[in-house]
Length: 265
Image (cartoon, rainbow, N blue to C red; front, side, top):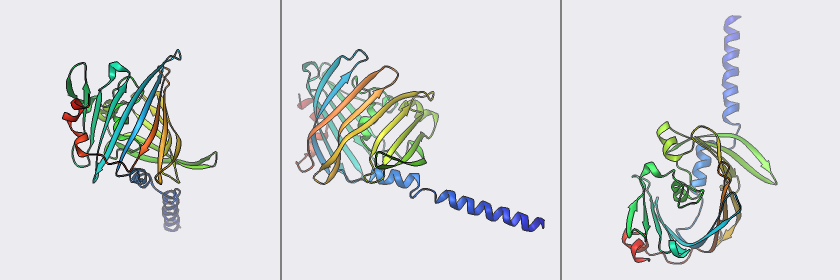
């Protein structure tokens, strides 16, 4: 009798594990892979207006133009500031590398020098916005080297089905570098874009919320036209509005050099 009971318990455990493993249509890494492999063009040129709103409602506007191009699994991108006048000529260059450390450089015309952004500073705020240097670099992609993942549940909201993805940095050093202890993302099952992401600070407190809005096709590519990042701790909001998105315009390799940051001024 004892042998039969143990056998039943083992069978129940196996069935239970099987049911749990098949609970979601995709596992967490498969979801992340689909997010990262989503079509977003070989290259793109676009205008970006940054609207920064402080807790008193005062607005500041930044106008920029950005370029991005893939080189196999690697990605290079650059942002140039056009206005306001005091920031005109400021440039931010990023190499998002697959097989070696990522690289970022910032050119400030007032200093007349290109400064490298260290990995330890990638969690810092990007030029007064509520986005970090890392947020800007990764855009809609998710780092598989920095995070462990889990699908918490599947939900339906306003006619859209989502995977609720939890991303947790792999160790304390990464938590400190990124400035996040956890990110909870709502991944649209149809287009594999996070329509919402909630960020928690190093101590686990609510830090900020990202909404990806006005998502529509450009050249048959799903494209986010409005990013809204709200910082819940300092009551600051950053709205990024993309326009004149062009996936067909030629982007020269010479756009992505440290020398080009200075020449753009």
